[in-house]
Image (cartoon, one colour):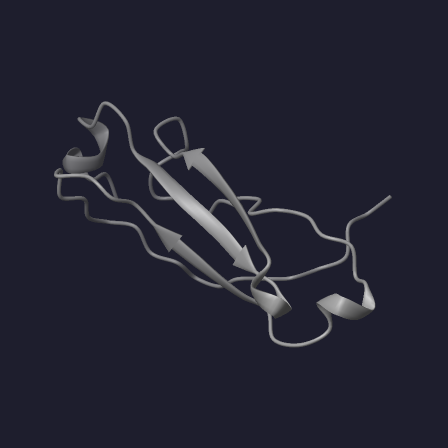
Length: 85
């Protein structure tokens, strides 16, 4: 499904953050402008080493802050998985 609102945007970037236990966080931005519309895509939020201080609740947030209204972004799931070496 093509969404003209997303196609006409000059910059559609999102800020992704992983919040580890003890409030340590990893943040990065991703530009979704070049991603295919109507397809599921994966976006890497960050990487961290599983250390004793990282045991506990891990959460993430996705945000975009601008005066331009956006629509059409659907988040299917978030997965935390080990990195393949």
